[in-house]
Image (cartoon, rainbow, N blue to C red; front, top):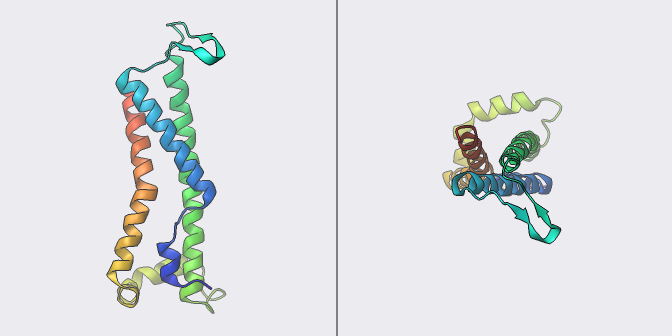
Length: 154
């Protein structure tokens, strides 16, 4: 069985969620480049497709919907992965308490005993866990929100 530190220092996101995060970042950056750089394509040469000027506005609007889709999908997947992570940490920290302590009870326990847990596992562990989650989770959410905000105000 993995221990508490190993659980929180490993990636909090499943492989599926990481793929959704990747796609969210790709579509967000693509839409941002189109909005800020005015990079709407006029044709797709390999397919022989030419896009008329009146239809070019459809591309950013379509990408806007795709970014919203991936943002919602990433948020839902992230929540599920977070709950699985906390459940795994609960099993590692209190292996015999599954029947006695539910998910919410465990979160209350962590909140009330955070000083004991930090003392036992160290500040460095908590800092690195927060740093990794900030990059893995909050950065893609900020990029997507920034992109959507620019598309709405464009």
